Amino acid sequence: MSLTVRDLSKSYPTRGGDMPVLRGVTLTLAAGESVAIMGPSGSGKSTLLHVLGTLDRPTTGRVELDGTDPFALPEAGLAGFRNASIGFVFQDHHLLPQCTVLENVLIPTLVGKPADDATRDRAGHLLDRVGLTGRLDHRPAELSGGERQRAAVARALIRQPKLVLADEPTGNLDRRNAQLVGELLLELHREQRTILVVVTHSLDLAKLFPRRLDMDDGKLDAAPAP
Ligand SMILES: Nc1ncnc2c1ncn2[C@@H]1O[C@H](COP(=O)(O)OP(=O)(O)O)[C@@H](O)[C@H]1O
Ligand SMILES: [Mg+2]
Image 1 (cartoon, rainbow, N blue to C red):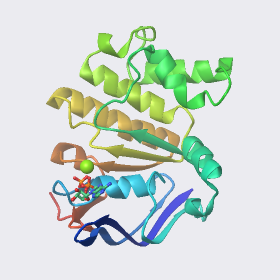
Image 2 (image 1 turned 90 degrees about the vertical axis):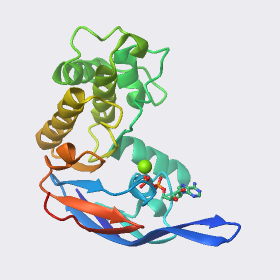
Image 3 (image 1 turned 90 degrees about the horizontal axis):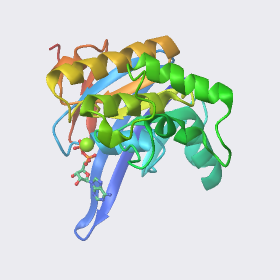
Image 4 (image 1 turned 180 degrees about the horizontal axis):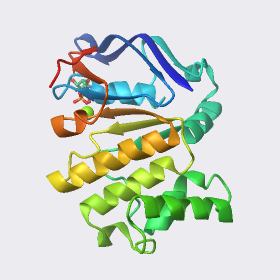
């Protein structure tokens, strides 16, 4: 698995003309590699993650996952590809309030069928791994913020994605829980040899990554040493 992004640009149409948000982003990551992206608010970090996650199309440039351009797939194929290959963690946990922790983790596996025993075992194992043993039947409202975000990490990994994208995953957490969630993301990334791309404002989190990039006004550059 590899991720290649070549000369990516993205503009949004506005009344005053097209507004460029990404300007010539180039990035290559091999299986097992990770990167932290930092940068001021509005610099295009979330837009980049959306394009990498195939949720949004680039204006120009190319994204390749394992040599395949996902945007060349028909719409239904693209959704299936995204569901099977990419895991997302957002700043807000995005857990469904009416579902239990276990049900939330199983949601990405429920494409028109109930979860089989192997999938439920994997969900249980992942929830053990993120420290939620004994919380499987809780609803999100019955969890702490850190626990909710750890459930969201388990959900992102349930389909064994090749690429994991996290947009300010610790942004709503206190320092201790931010540390826990950040370390978990990296440990699971190493265990499962995913590609991990994390956007963060936290220097504490970014420092855990071997590679750091700065996003500034739609351009991505190597970050200065912290
Ligand atoms: N759907 C959209 N339509 C128009 N402008 C957008 C849209 N999404 C984001 N933008 C603009 O693109 C810029 C970058 O946004 P974003 O990628 O969310 O930045 P960041 O995540 O770094 O804070 C911002 O100026 C934002 O207002
Ligand atoms: Mg953002």
